[in-house]
Amino acid sequence: MRILISGASVAGPVLAYWLNRYGFRPTVIERAPTLRKTGGHAVDLFRPSLRIVERMGLLHTIADNEVGTERVTFLMEGASPIRLDHHSALGVTNGRHVEIMRDDLSEIFFDATRDDIEYVFDDSITSVDDGQDEVRVTFGHGSPRSFDLVIGADGLHSNVRGLAFGEEHHFSHHLGGYVAVATVPDHLGLSAEMITMADPGRMLAMYSPRQMDEARVIFMFRTPGRLDYHHRDTTRQKELLREHFGGTGWEAPRLLAELDRAPAFYFDEITQLRLDNWSRGRVSLVGDAAYCPGPAVGASTSMAVIGAYVLAGELAAASGDHTAAFPAYEREMAGYVRKARAYAVRMVKQVIPGTRAQVWAGAQALRLIGALPAQMGRALSKRINSTGVHEDVEVKNYPDSLQD
Ligand SMILES: Cc1cc2nc3c(=O)[nH]c(=O)nc-3n(C[C@H](O)[C@H](O)[C@H](O)COP(=O)(O)OP(=O)(O)OC[C@H]3O[C@@H](n4cnc5c(N)ncnc54)[C@H](O)[C@@H]3O)c2cc1C
Image (tube, rainbow, N blue to C red):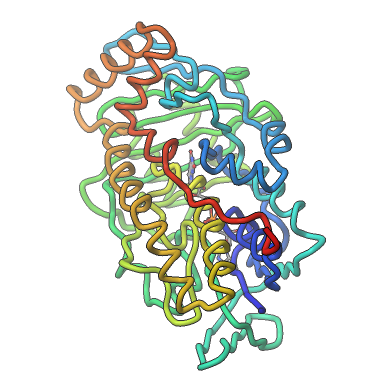
């Protein structure tokens, strides 16, 4: 059975891996000319997704590529610096968590699948014609081809979703903020430490991955409504950052000045996708394309890995019958997606406190977490951060291969 997957980041290659293992014939098409190595940001894999990558034989490779954050220092207006170990800051209670750069993770998944799976780079789907028995697909560059199923694993602004479900604005909800990431020199020498600074309506964080010389800076800020800018107009986006972070202390002036020299820059609205279901006929969606709870606030990389594994598992269980597999996949993921959406809404408010009182309350909570014995502190942090949504999700166990 021929299955076309759009997107070679996290969900796409994981789905391709498991489909191949179950005897399907996946092809992955990626818009970028090569595997992205443009910068990216740190992402999280919690215990349930680590179990899946362990079954893929990739746990050690992934652990070897950890970002290496050991401590988080919080700078908050009117409070002295608060230092927590990384798991206490995040609310990880079982010790099983890996933070890794998204581009490194994609590369690991790509390397694990490249010999068995057809990858087509530098191309994009232009139409999907869902017929009775197959889907006729046209591409920007390649010749038209037919597939039994088409899966969009092409991220928050999914092309496949646009073609099969309609325009993004029907499903996307503004969560009240914006996020930017830039690559900057590590002038603070931040080995193993992330520093975050919050004052009302804005948050700034800086870290330097263990395997890189440079650092990443994340800017997040709140707005009452949507801002006016074009998604390709990086000059305007940098201007918006300067407007919103003007007058911010700590390293903000220097980091804002670095923006014009930054080799990699990303800016987006923090939006949440709310689709009631994510399959139409022979077309389905996985990962951020289907259920992005919000970039940078949803810990959605674990969800992309789990969703890909569940979709492949349900297709195998239904012997490729998508009319049974797609609804089963949606049923399996629905509860997790619902909780992840609520988690992201809370995270926006927590990560970017809106008022001085919220900044103060956040500082008190962090201080209390730091004052408790480690395991109790992590448990409290888990409660406050709702990390259990990702740490404790139950994932159905699918066989390793069809023979099992
Ligand atoms: C700033 C930021 C910070 C984040 N921080 C965290 C975090 O701390 N923890 C965490 O767990 N997650 C985090 N995330 C979320 C995480 O990056 C995503 O959940 C994860 O990458 C989703 O994987 P995906 O494969 O579904 O989609 P993506 O990683 O978005 O990949 C989509 C792929 O599709 C490709 N593509 C796009 N359009 C087309 C097309 N037309 N044709 C073919 N290919 C196409 C893209 O090039 C890309 O390779 C963050 C996201 C952002 C933006």
